Amino acid sequence: MSFARSHVVVLLVITVPILIGIFYGSRVAADVAVASQAIPIPITTDPRHPVEVYIAPLFVRTLPAVLEAISTTSVPEDRVQMVPPASYGLGGQLVITRALPVMVTDAGTTTTFRTWAETVGDLLTEQKVELGDRDRVVPSLETQLGLEQAIIITRVSVVEVKKTETIVITSKTINDPETPRGQQQIVQKGEKGSRVLIYQVTRENSQETGRKLLKTDVTKEPVAEIVSVGTKVQVLGSGRATWYDPPWSGLTAAHNTLPKGTMVDVVNIANGKRVTVKINDRGIQSDAVIDLSPEAFRELATLGTGVISVRLEIAG
Image (cartoon, rainbow, N blue to C red):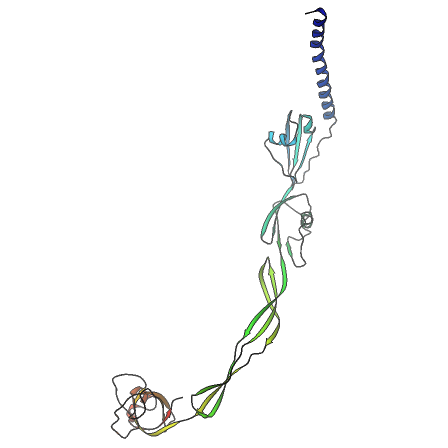
């Protein structure tokens, strides 16, 4: 190696460390100067916003890295301050002032907000929660927010609801003295009608809590059904009635000429009592026009009476 080249190498070995020391020394000195001029972080005493103070480690130059290093987290609403700033990497004091958590239940759905608002109304405005004229808020909008605060919003709506109903057919009967008793005939066919009911419906959180009928509009009048009912009595005859003891029970009778199955009204002429019997037997040997079962005879007179005067009519 030549004498000149050896002098250059020696010069570099000596001067480079000196230059590096001067550069970093001036940077550290500047950082220390800035840190010495920092204003102390003010700490609130509001119990709604608790304060956490940490000592930040050296050589960590971003706030997320500082939070990770001290094993804590923050939410966007928290106020996080550090002196000197984390970018200097000099450590220092880290202060986190927590936002107030508030639970808001809106129409049954609960959300937790973190806020610095002072009142219930301020929070709802901050979160852009719009209220209707009938909506209810508990506690009131003027209420100061406190610890473990819960707010309940009940959404109230009043609407008109229409409901269509069918008007049922009514039936009307008229007596027809020219038609045998019991016979019926439809003289006017009925038709259903319809109407619209208008209700005022109150709902809270989409659930109906009240209903009031405001108006009824009949859109189609119903037509009543008219039935003609015969009242003319068909007398089959009159005479004496007796009773006998058949091997069956019920309101039955024997008659020598009427078809079996015929329903006959038997009227006691003496007292006006009547009974409807079914003809299901023959074989009357006396001059009686009808022979009644014991159950049927008791409807008209006592069995001890034995024989009574009756009138026979077609049952209606």
